[in-house]
Length: 325
Image (tube, rainbow, N blue to C red):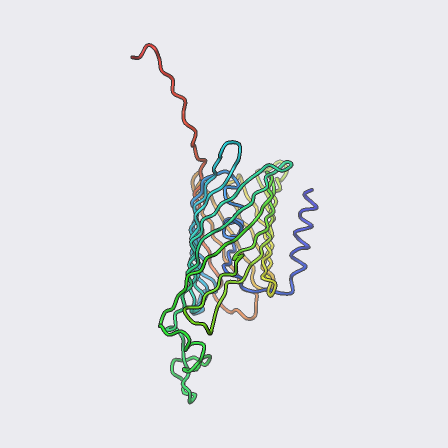
C-alpha cells in the first residue's frame, strides 16, 4: 500500500513538469496550512488550532506577492457524527491588486474502511482592490514620466477605473474532499468554485477569480529502531491553463523537530525547518531559492506559527456526599 501511494504521487507530479505558473495564493508550507487549499482538511487531527503565516515572495522585487493568513479551526461532535468548523482570513497583495478573503469553513467526517472520509466547504467573500495611483506612466509623446515604459497615460483599461482606488466584493465558494488514515492522507479540492467576478462598477472590463484545482498527498514512514519519521508529500495545482507541481521530503525527530527540502518544478528549491517550541506550539520557517531564469531576487521567505490543543467539552461528573449538607 505504501509503495503504491508513493509511486502514484511521484508520477502524478512528473507528468505535469511541462507547465508552471503562480497560482494564488502560494505557500511553501502547504503541509502546515492544509486549510488554505482544502476545507475538508480542517480538524483532521481532532485538535483545536490557531494558525498564522506570513509570506514574502521574491524579496527585492517591487510589487512582489505578499500573503498574510490567519485561521482558527476546531472539531465538533454531534451525537455519533464528527465535524470540523473554521474561520479563515487571507490578505494577498500582488502588484496593483489586493485580495482579502473572509471565509467560514465546515467539514463533515465519516468512517470509511480503516480511515476517515471528509467533505469540506468554504463560504465567504473576497474583497478585491485595485490601486490606480501606483501605476507608472509614459507620456503620449514618449517622454518618461516615472521610470516605466509599460503604460501610456491614455490607456483605455486604466481610464475605466474612475477612482484612484477601486474595489469590489464578490461571493466565494470552495469545495474539497479528503481521505486519511493514521499514516497518510490524500485530498482533492477546487477553490473559487463559482469563479467570482469583479467589475468595479464598469460594464466594459471585468476581472474574475479562476477556479483552482488542487491535489495533495502525504505519507508518514517510521524509520526502524529510531525516533525519526520520513514524511514525503506532493502538491499539484492547476486552472487547466497553467500548472504547478511540488515534491517535498521532510524528516521529523521525536515529533518535535523537522526539516527538509522541496522542489517546485521550474520555479524553486525550498528549504524548510520547524520546531515545537513548547507542547502544542510550533514555529516553522521556509526559504525559496529561485531556479527560474525569469526570477532574479533574494528568494522568498515564509514564517508560520501554530498553537494546537485538545478541546475538552465534556462536563465533569459531580458527586454529592450525604455527609456534606
